[in-house]
Image: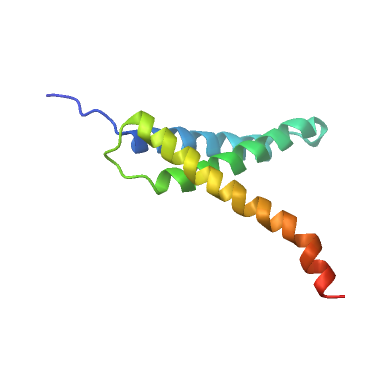
Length: 97
């Protein structure tokens, strides 16, 4: 029986789920004395979550290179929107005074 090749999205989702589980394990099972590992777990969890959102918006039958380019574009758009929001905070806070 021939083995089916996994698509880009299936591989990426598998890796990101493993990353999320690793992040949750670091947060849950690290003693408070090793706070740096808890912070690392939080960063891993948040990063994998954002990447999971980006991977979820990619068609299943896309090659690896195009998939990575689309993820980069989606994350760039998210970064620009966050940047605009951060830049507008001082302006909008002055409007309320």
